[in-house]
Length: 265
Image 1 (cartoon, rainbow, N blue to C red):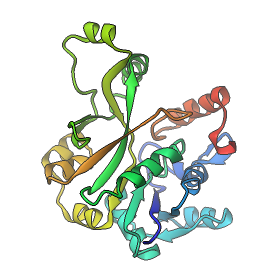
Image 2 (tube, rainbow, N blue to C red; image 1 turned 90 degrees about the vertical axis):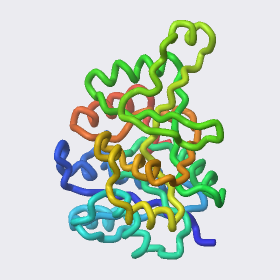
Image 3 (cartoon, rainbow, N blue to C red; image 1 turned 45 degrees about the vertical axis):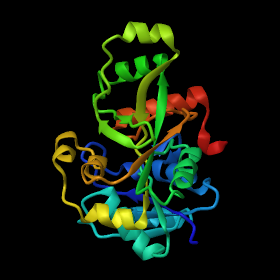
């Protein structure tokens, strides 16, 4: 069996942060940091997928495998499929690790890969079970960053729904807080693992109704009846979602100064 392939889509044309894959966080580019995450997932290989010559040159300078993909591909999942077809068409498991997620935990990726060994699954994606304190932090963060995803899960671990708001609502939250130290909220980590056939099917589907409303690709899979498994993972060393703005980058550098740099560990 071919090794799982981690594809890192990286584009220069971000509306809120142009050129962000090459932006430096504490002296190391965001893309190099994300590639270092992928390089630390045992038993797999990775490739950067880009449509920009400057990113490709940066990869060459730092000995990062890279493939060029068409500039008109609409999403990261489309770039992941195109890159896998060009780089490792025999790979059965494809991980979409966004290039603006430099603090992803290699253990999360390994857990997704392991879960995808189940033949019944199409897609796997991680989520963190939040403590009440972590939920309070998420709520406070959402004042300035309102769209941070959560998920609800069926008893068998299958994803029931995703939202950019905090779900589910809790009618008797005070009672729940008194009964347990762990909240019922699962913060979704925007990392996706696909079986190759599932990725091909997913990309062939039209944008779905709720995908359009929420702006979440994974709802297309849910609406199509695909089996999306939630993999419960622990909070990483630096718990930070993707870097979308220069302000996010500044917060990331502050976290590195406070908690240490995972790139150097």
